[in-house]
Length: 269
Image 1 (cartoon, rainbow, N blue to C red):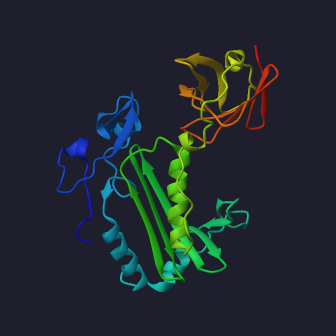
Image 2: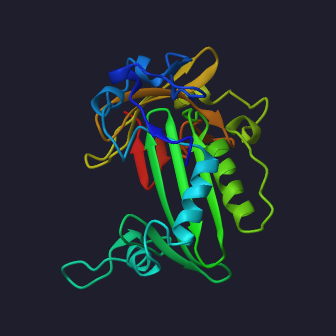
């Protein structure tokens, strides 16, 4: 692996050849992660080794996959331990994702697919960075995704991600679509003013839509996330009374004096 190294740009100030700067989107512009004014994680975690600030390429990751397959790093027996879900104190298998049927081994999400057999994977991410390493043990193939820019449109991002997963499984990917692609063109806005106002919400809700308002002829929402941080985002019409947002898969539906999202029905105040 000749293009892999640890480097702390903020701490050491030593960018290297072909360095791909992590970038985040804030205040309507793209900025380097180290210049972020909003994301404290950039500073808080700078200086870690191993679980962060390891720079590499897809070609070196392929070399790493080959080295594992050839037993140059760990023996097949040692790797088998890593690819076996661990046991909890109650005797049950450790679970990585119950919905996907994935167990958790020694640093790997572990699953089996009917056509491809044993598949292990691990993700990673920091502000401005997203990674994915998926190894198809029995099928002798590997999927590596390295990204150095935050995504803005969740639908488009998931479309890309799902497309890569499809290609890795010899399937044709679906077209990538953004929220602009699925939004209603030239919508009837005659009811939009009636949607505006503040809405009540359950006390135990992790995500709260607090207020709906009009701005520059478009509908916007003010919300509060599980950390108590406020956010404002544009709503895109997906139907007569149904709306979505670019930064998530949330769907809002307006009824008679109420707003519905997830499993909540919130009355207008």
